[in-house]
Image (tube, rainbow, N blue to C red; front, side):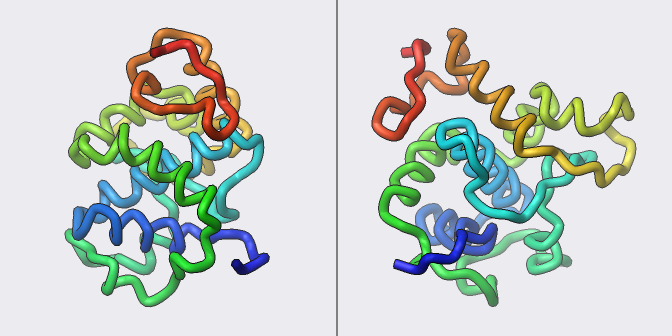
Length: 171
């Protein structure tokens, strides 16, 4: 196991290896939710790359640069990243998140992010269709997603948090 911190590319490769080719928008949102929920559970970011509050939801610009001009992407399309650098516990955590979010379409995931505070707060009141590149702080993700575990939110109802740190009452 590597001692370096995971990258968004490592996570993206894993998502694509597990779920196959998908739209780049869906990949971005699944990586966002992996970052957000991992951070909420562990109190620290899964990877160092930031997400920005774009009009269609959170986007990690370095990942965007890698898949730019593509609509669909597969694991072999990514020229960087390594699943082997992700510890088994991290893969298990990402699996729990993907089990809840991967069944949703890219449009549903985008709409969901638009209803959540980290994206809305980062946009500083801009209309949802207005272009912007404001960073969504990891601390904002931690606060918001931890607050969902204290509610009856259906967003977390299917995630078995006690296995890796977050107790939740939504079950």
